[in-house]
Image 1: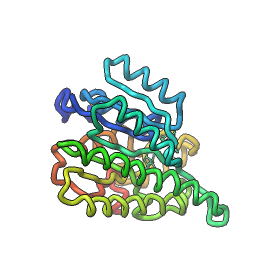
Image 2 (image 1 turned 135 degrees about the vertical axis):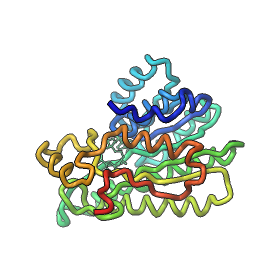
Image 3 (image 1 turned 180 degrees about the horizontal axis):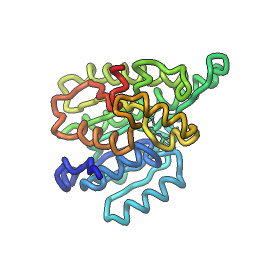
Length: 261
Ligand SMILES: NC(=O)c1ccc[n+]([C@@H]2O[C@H](COP(=O)([O-])OP(=O)(O)OC[C@H]3O[C@@H](n4cnc5c(N)ncnc54)[C@H](O)[C@@H]3O)[C@@H](O)[C@H]2O)c1
């Protein structure tokens, strides 16, 4: 069995903190586990309070320093509340990972104005305003900080298919552009920001998908399997680490080769 985090030294994130949105499920949860296993103090943020309670308790049992914060990233006041919690309870935020998102798969004439607003509010505005709040604090840290925003392969080659629709794909394409714009604006500061482009990944986001369709998706990928949340968490650990100290404003494809088809 592969051990995706073995490359990273034990406790390499000791004394460092990470704020993770979407941390009650899938990639965000696995990223919380990954950082916790390497000694980080972890803020797990999500709108799913029951999930936070369950997985926060599970991680605390390993001895990790875990905070859980209920947040709706589609609501600016809720984001402000989550960061106010951090101001009161953490020395600083060293790393930010944004995974919170909704996925939708509606056909063109099923998508109305409210649908687009819901998707953009959470996936794009929620990501940008979380980044904005973290950057504000990281600029005050002597060591700056690192940010990884989860975009998607759909943001590069489009949605419109059975698992991701136009609104979702557009929100992810805009996230990629947003990451580059923020990187440009923060040039010369000590805050690094990058994007991660996961390919199809077997997480609870796709729990509604027929297993036969998952097999078809996997069969079409050059790697002949869907991604796992730990594939993404390992890439995020890398992007936040000093090993990626010259990786800036980039988008890392972790997609089993889907991008070069
Ligand atoms: N699974 C895939 O195939 C895939 C592929 C490409 C990109 N992605 C992206 O990766 C990221 C993580 O996806 P995942 O597969 O782990 O999904 P997931 O559904 O397992 O987890 C998403 C989490 O985000 C939370 N969330 C949703 N809306 C929120 C809100 N308004 N405020 C706070 N939390 C909210 C959910 O409660 C959930 O815990 C997402 O940004 C997703 O778009 C996923």
